[in-house]
Image 1 (cartoon, helix red, strand yellow):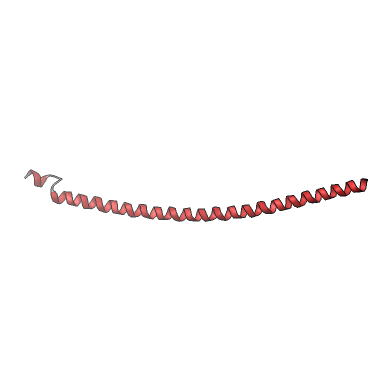
Image 2 (cartoon, rainbow, N blue to C red):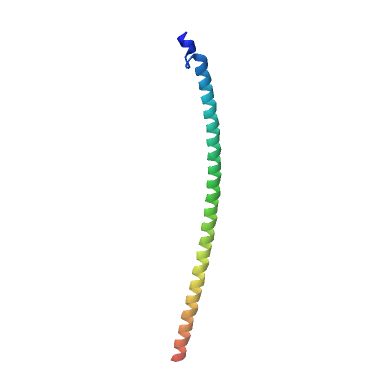
Length: 86
């Protein structure tokens, strides 16, 4: 009698376990979806960083070229001025 009226009787316990299992399965699916969303965002971010790093490298290469060109032109002008003075 006490066993059948207890909240932990076998049928009620099985029902509780099934409800808990259902909730946990739903939570697991939500977490899996969140993980997929985060993974997608990460991959997009990674591709963006790679692209920006590539552009930065090209830009820095271009800047080095321009600076070298300006320095060479300036040195050439100085040499011309020296030659004209002598």
